[in-house]
Length: 70
Image (cartoon, rainbow, N blue to C red; front, top):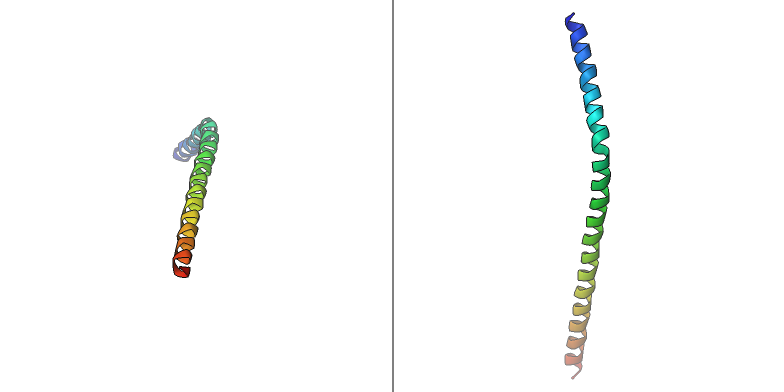
């Protein structure tokens, strides 16, 4: 009888966990889309920062080059 109850409990727990997984699936989809947007925004900010950093570096390099020629 003990084995029967343990087996029944395992089956019930598997059904409960699969039910939770089915209910959380839309949440996971929304989180995936949100995470994709956040990562895209971070990459966009990084690219803008890198372009600005490169531009300032080139301006400084050109100023130093002009100062050494004069």
